[in-house]
Length: 193
Image 1: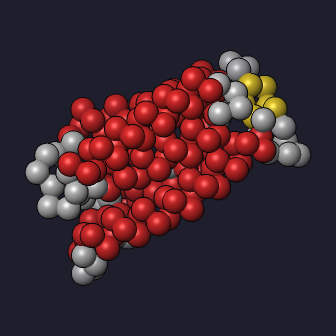
Image 2: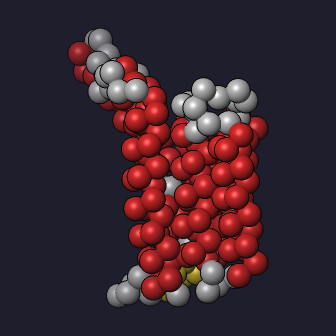
Image 3: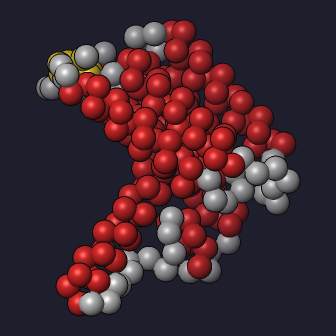
């Protein structure tokens, strides 16, 4: 029921709202990962980096959970080696929902929700693009009688692809952003304990 945050906040006791935070985390991470699974290697690579960041963050709290995260990252990397661009195997909902649930489970077991939010930043951005598009469309439809769009397509990686950016470039950019976020999430997790 305690969530560790960086100083000056320290340990924050959530009480009964911890269950609500955990439920929100499971639903949002599973759906965010499922939305991210659209380009070859995007979900697997960003999940692998998020698992590494979470493994670093939870290491002082529970080393067994850090080993689990590293194992999941290794499984994602193995999937990517077998299934890189021009993919032959589709991960599908079963794989992507399980990866999102595993990330949420690592955060729920240790209270490391803030490092999870950081390390899975690309996944969160993909989910936020869908929320923004739907909200904006419904609001403008209610106000003007016709709905308008923020993005050409959702989730965000499809918008970038429709703007003319090639699929491998989008995935490589997501990997670079995820690497930076992974390191920062690990650092935040270590200083929070």
